[in-house]
Image (cartoon, rainbow, N blue to C red; front, side):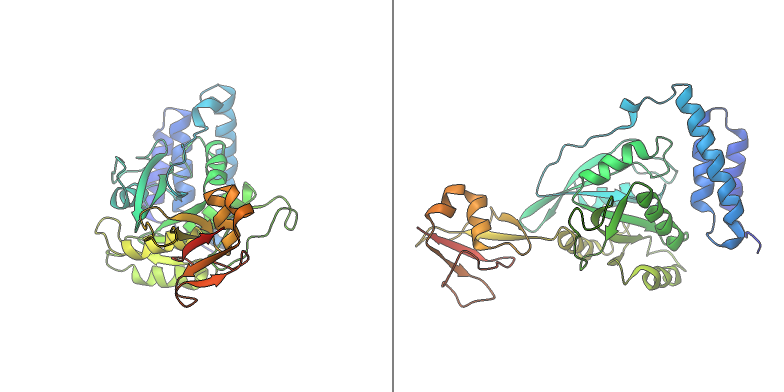
Length: 331
């Protein structure tokens, strides 16, 4: 089967031949791997490039070109939760963070614009969610920075470029994560607790399919949705034009598997500006403990205002809460 390599591949190959340093060669090889179509005709070439990449990284490490301290990045957690954006070079991650947050991200039409993680705060209704734009996953410093960042995040956005081969990009990201013993799961999947599935850490994830505004990409989107739509929520968007932003915001909130509840003193109005953040499936007792541990010991019952029950209904400690419920504790 012929390889049928695109013109961008040969440009990356030229950059490899002209590279004067090991990091430049690593960039070029990783670009070739990212651009290369994934089918039987490219299996042998892909294997050769992976072998070459491993040798280059080993050579760089031996020369001390990159110390471990340089590529282990830590981002201080802020807001309600932290969500990490993953993707290959030039898929539009920085543009998306710029569109959704207050981050001062550099945006360019060339590869490897983002050299370090860039955090920003995304407002969603009455909460703030931290988005972190990670360097491209084939950045030359490799997995040493990626693994701790992924494990530290509450959820993942895997961003793909509809103007390229989004299915191949997604498969490459999943393979990268699998190599780190990390398994992305969709919204409806149940997280398996430690011991039930050994070695793998599960992270909720969604797919952001960027550059929907370009001509001729609708077919690529349909192929992406057909291949991965049963496993992950897929959000078509254009970060540059602001298309699909509100749907993505809601999707990010749902991926976090959290809910907001509100407390009120008897006879007074609730404060909707300060929600109590709980995991879905939490109870009145969980809410009481999150406000103050003494509430659990002193509480006799609670009253609930929300969509599931009539207003002000008396409930017990094990009552399961819903997003938006208002709780009035009684000692």
